[in-house]
Length: 160
Image: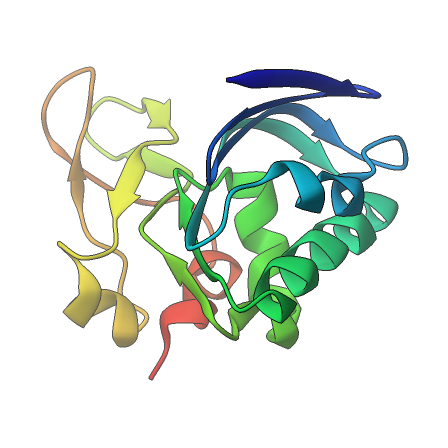
């Protein structure tokens, strides 16, 4: 495994698997990672991403384009909610990218708890395609939680 620091973003690379922690911003030169990433199905875990700005999105797009241009497939896992909003706004990012799971902001009507659980896309594919967020159990009380934001912020990318 290789560990790198790109500004305020930590990157771990293990073959064709990337794990990102921190901020994707103007200091995160993601396009420069292509030579270090293995080929085939490239998996990118963004669970630890806490911030994304417009320059960071430019770098993200460079990385995604570069991986696609090599002929590799891209799977995104545990996509951070700050990145999901961006993925839903930029149509190019929907092409040839498969999202396996993502974080979304949820609220429990029973106890008021707020959480950003991981949503498994395969398990909820039918409802996500209809832009209906699955109801997930509250980590505090076990009652069903509802999406705490507009569905478009998270689910447009799955709409069929």
